[in-house]
Amino acid sequence: MAHPGAPLTLTQTVERRFSYVCDEVKKKNITVWIIGFGTAPNPMLQACSGADHYFVADDAKELQEAFAAIGRRMGDLRVTR
Image (spheres, rainbow, N blue to C red):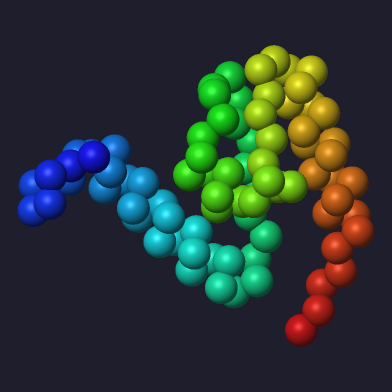
């Protein structure tokens, strides 16, 4: 963690901006789906999407399964005004 008043690192700057945008998108009732491909789970991305909208895929088969799961869940959604 950076010392108070110290300049932020590039990673910290990007993460703060991403978190802000994520919060603003969710305020508009937009569902955020995230698939981490070939990476370890990311707590910031998990917080953005929520546990039931966050997937980790280590290979093409798991990636295809994640997209299939998202497709099934989206099939249950209805557009409303």
